[in-house]
Image 1 (cartoon, helix red, strand yellow):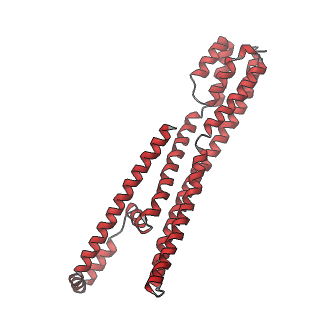
Image 2 (tube, one colour; image 1 turned 30 degrees about the vertical axis):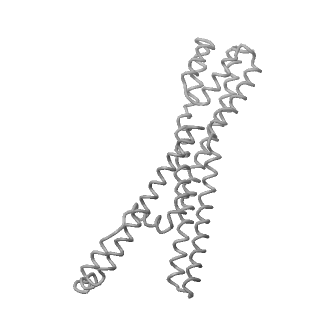
Image 3 (tube, rainbow, N blue to C red; image 1 turned 60 degrees about the vertical axis):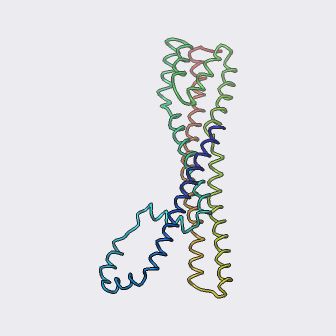
Length: 273
C-alpha cells in the first residue's frame, strides 16, 4: 500500500510539473503574440510586399503530433485537463503492471504437468515439489500446496488446492477495481470540464451583452476538448481492461483444469489416498 501511495504521488508530481511547463509555454506564447501585435504594421507591410512567400511559409509550418497535443491541452484549460491526464497515466501504469504480471504468470501448462508426472514417477513427492517450487506462476503454486499435503489424504489435498486457487485468483485480479475507477472517472471529469466551460462561455456572452457566433463557437470548442480527452483516455484504458480480463479468465481456466489433473496424477501414482 505504501509503494502504491508513493507511486501515485510520484505520478502526480510529474503531471503537475508537466502542467506547469505547459502553462509557462502558454504564457510565453501569449507574450509573443502581444509582441507580434505591437509590430503589426511592420508585419502587414512585409506581408503585402511578398504575399506568396509568406503563404508558402505558412503552408510549410506543420505542428507535430506532440505539439498538437500540447496546443489542445492548453486550449482545453490546464485546470480541467490535468485530472484527466492523471487518470490516464495512473490507469496506464496499473494496466502495464497487470499485463507484465499476467504474462509472467503464464506458462506451458501441458509441459509443466508432464514434468510433474515424470517427477512423481521417478522421485516421488519431493521431486515433484522441487519442480513446482522452481516454476513461476499460480498453477505451480497450487501444485506445490497440493503436493505439500499429499500425506494428509486426497480430500485435504483437494480442499487445499481449491482454497489456494481462490487466493491466486485474487492476486490475478489485484488492482482491477482501481482500473475500473479510472475508466469511469476520466470521461466524467471530461464532462465536468465541458459543463464548466459552457457556463464560462455563457457568462462571457452575458458580460458582452450580445451573442457573438465567434464567442459561442470558441467557448464550445474549448469546453468540448475536455470531453474528447476524457473519452480518449477511457477508450485506451477500456481496451487494456478487456485484454487483462480475458487473460485472467484464460489463466483461471487453466488453473481449474490443472487442479483436476493434479488429483488424477496423485491417485494414479498412489501418492495420496
